Length: 77
Image (cartoon, rainbow, N blue to C red; front, side):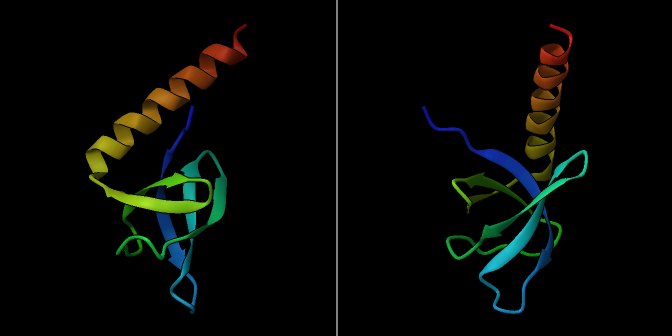
């Protein structure tokens, strides 16, 4: 099974091939953005270190809220 996570681009490196993506709650990672046309502030779907799709902001935020809900349930176990 594959999992892709939405995140928000917070900066783009000078090479324009990599960006820092914020996944929320202080988690950010460097991501390859060569497969998409994305800008700072865009939400992208990330799989295996690659942004594979630019997402609608509202849909990305809904998905992130679901992930946060799942994580909070796991913490209560």
